[in-house]
Length: 155
Image (cartoon, rainbow, N blue to C red; front, side, top):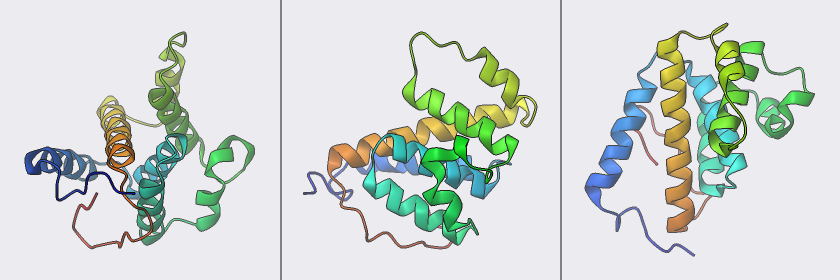
Protein backbone atom coordinates (compact mmCIF):
# COMPACT_ATOMS: atom_id res chain seq x y z
CA UNK A 1 0.00 0.00 0.00
CA UNK A 2 1.36 3.40 -0.96
CA UNK A 3 1.79 5.52 2.16
CA UNK A 4 3.04 8.73 0.51
CA UNK A 5 2.77 9.36 -3.22
CA UNK A 6 5.52 11.30 -4.95
CA UNK A 7 2.86 13.97 -5.57
CA UNK A 8 2.39 14.33 -1.80
CA UNK A 9 6.12 14.62 -1.06
CA UNK A 10 7.65 18.08 -0.78
CA UNK A 11 8.29 19.26 -4.36
CA UNK A 12 11.65 20.81 -3.46
CA UNK A 13 12.85 17.57 -1.86
CA UNK A 14 12.16 15.54 -4.99
CA UNK A 15 13.64 18.25 -7.21
CA UNK A 16 16.88 18.15 -5.19
CA UNK A 17 16.97 14.37 -5.60
CA UNK A 18 16.35 14.67 -9.35
CA UNK A 19 19.07 17.33 -9.66
CA UNK A 20 21.61 15.01 -8.05
CA UNK A 21 20.45 12.20 -10.34
CA UNK A 22 20.92 14.41 -13.41
CA UNK A 23 24.36 15.48 -12.17
CA UNK A 24 25.48 11.85 -11.79
CA UNK A 25 23.98 10.90 -15.17
CA UNK A 26 25.98 13.67 -16.87
CA UNK A 27 29.26 12.32 -15.46
CA UNK A 28 31.73 10.35 -17.54
CA UNK A 29 30.52 7.10 -15.97
CA UNK A 30 29.02 4.55 -18.35
CA UNK A 31 25.20 4.46 -18.26
CA UNK A 32 25.15 0.65 -18.24
CA UNK A 33 27.55 0.57 -15.27
CA UNK A 34 25.41 3.09 -13.37
CA UNK A 35 22.29 1.00 -13.97
CA UNK A 36 24.12 -2.17 -12.93
CA UNK A 37 25.13 -0.50 -9.65
CA UNK A 38 21.65 0.91 -9.08
CA UNK A 39 20.12 -2.50 -9.65
CA UNK A 40 22.60 -4.23 -7.29
CA UNK A 41 22.10 -1.71 -4.49
CA UNK A 42 18.34 -2.00 -4.92
CA UNK A 43 18.67 -5.80 -4.58
CA UNK A 44 20.58 -5.39 -1.32
CA UNK A 45 17.97 -2.93 -0.03
CA UNK A 46 15.01 -5.06 -1.24
CA UNK A 47 13.50 -2.09 -3.04
CA UNK A 48 10.99 -3.58 -5.48
CA UNK A 49 10.10 -0.25 -7.10
CA UNK A 50 13.75 0.56 -7.85
CA UNK A 51 14.43 -2.99 -9.02
CA UNK A 52 11.60 -2.65 -11.54
CA UNK A 53 12.83 0.76 -12.65
CA UNK A 54 16.50 -0.08 -12.98
CA UNK A 55 15.88 -3.41 -14.69
CA UNK A 56 13.92 -1.52 -17.34
CA UNK A 57 16.46 1.31 -17.54
CA UNK A 58 19.36 -1.15 -17.84
CA UNK A 59 17.63 -3.10 -20.58
CA UNK A 60 16.89 0.17 -22.39
CA UNK A 61 20.60 1.07 -22.12
CA UNK A 62 21.48 -2.24 -23.82
CA UNK A 63 22.21 -4.44 -20.82
CA UNK A 64 21.90 -8.22 -21.12
CA UNK A 65 19.07 -9.67 -18.99
CA UNK A 66 21.35 -12.57 -17.97
CA UNK A 67 23.71 -10.12 -16.29
CA UNK A 68 20.82 -8.57 -14.36
CA UNK A 69 19.18 -11.74 -13.11
CA UNK A 70 22.61 -13.10 -12.13
CA UNK A 71 23.75 -9.93 -10.39
CA UNK A 72 23.16 -11.10 -6.82
CA UNK A 73 25.71 -13.87 -7.55
CA UNK A 74 28.13 -11.70 -9.56
CA UNK A 75 31.19 -13.19 -7.85
CA UNK A 76 30.20 -16.65 -9.13
CA UNK A 77 29.79 -15.75 -12.81
CA UNK A 78 32.08 -14.79 -15.71
CA UNK A 79 29.68 -12.05 -16.93
CA UNK A 80 31.25 -8.99 -15.32
CA UNK A 81 34.53 -7.27 -16.20
CA UNK A 82 37.18 -6.65 -13.54
CA UNK A 83 36.23 -2.96 -13.67
CA UNK A 84 32.57 -3.82 -13.02
CA UNK A 85 33.53 -6.22 -10.23
CA UNK A 86 35.54 -3.48 -8.51
CA UNK A 87 32.57 -1.09 -8.77
CA UNK A 88 30.13 -3.74 -7.52
CA UNK A 89 32.33 -4.53 -4.50
CA UNK A 90 32.50 -0.80 -3.76
CA UNK A 91 28.71 -0.45 -4.07
CA UNK A 92 28.13 -3.34 -1.68
CA UNK A 93 30.58 -1.93 0.87
CA UNK A 94 29.07 1.57 0.76
CA UNK A 95 25.54 0.17 1.00
CA UNK A 96 26.22 -2.13 3.93
CA UNK A 97 28.87 0.09 5.62
CA UNK A 98 30.40 -2.62 7.80
CA UNK A 99 31.76 -0.90 10.90
CA UNK A 100 34.83 -3.11 11.16
CA UNK A 101 35.93 -2.96 7.53
CA UNK A 102 38.34 -0.42 6.13
CA UNK A 103 37.85 0.45 2.48
CA UNK A 104 41.48 1.17 1.57
CA UNK A 105 41.77 -2.06 -0.40
CA UNK A 106 38.60 -1.26 -2.34
CA UNK A 107 39.89 2.20 -3.28
CA UNK A 108 43.20 0.66 -4.36
CA UNK A 109 41.25 -1.72 -6.61
CA UNK A 110 39.06 1.07 -7.98
CA UNK A 111 42.09 3.22 -8.86
CA UNK A 112 43.13 0.53 -11.34
CA UNK A 113 40.00 1.28 -13.40
CA UNK A 114 38.66 4.70 -12.37
CA UNK A 115 40.08 8.18 -11.84
CA UNK A 116 39.58 9.85 -8.46
CA UNK A 117 36.91 12.03 -10.07
CA UNK A 118 35.10 8.93 -11.31
CA UNK A 119 35.36 7.33 -7.85
CA UNK A 120 33.76 10.47 -6.42
CA UNK A 121 30.91 10.11 -8.95
CA UNK A 122 30.59 6.39 -8.14
CA UNK A 123 30.32 7.29 -4.46
CA UNK A 124 27.61 9.87 -5.16
CA UNK A 125 25.71 7.47 -7.48
CA UNK A 126 25.73 4.76 -4.80
CA UNK A 127 24.67 7.19 -2.07
CA UNK A 128 21.92 8.48 -4.37
CA UNK A 129 20.38 5.08 -5.13
CA UNK A 130 20.52 4.23 -1.42
CA UNK A 131 18.56 7.43 -0.75
CA UNK A 132 16.00 6.61 -3.46
CA UNK A 133 15.64 3.08 -2.05
CA UNK A 134 14.93 4.44 1.39
CA UNK A 135 12.41 7.00 0.09
CA UNK A 136 10.49 4.51 -2.01
CA UNK A 137 10.50 1.86 0.72
CA UNK A 138 9.29 4.41 3.29
CA UNK A 139 6.66 5.85 0.93
CA UNK A 140 5.44 2.37 -0.03
CA UNK A 141 5.75 3.17 -3.74
CA UNK A 142 4.08 0.42 -5.74
CA UNK A 143 6.36 -1.33 -8.25
CA UNK A 144 5.63 -2.59 -11.72
CA UNK A 145 4.34 0.41 -13.61
CA UNK A 146 7.58 2.28 -14.33
CA UNK A 147 8.07 3.24 -17.98
CA UNK A 148 11.41 4.31 -19.44
CA UNK A 149 11.23 7.88 -20.69
CA UNK A 150 13.83 9.44 -22.94
CA UNK A 151 15.85 12.30 -21.44
CA UNK A 152 13.73 12.50 -18.30
CA UNK A 153 14.69 11.61 -14.77
CA UNK A 154 11.78 9.79 -13.17
CA UNK A 155 12.11 8.34 -9.73
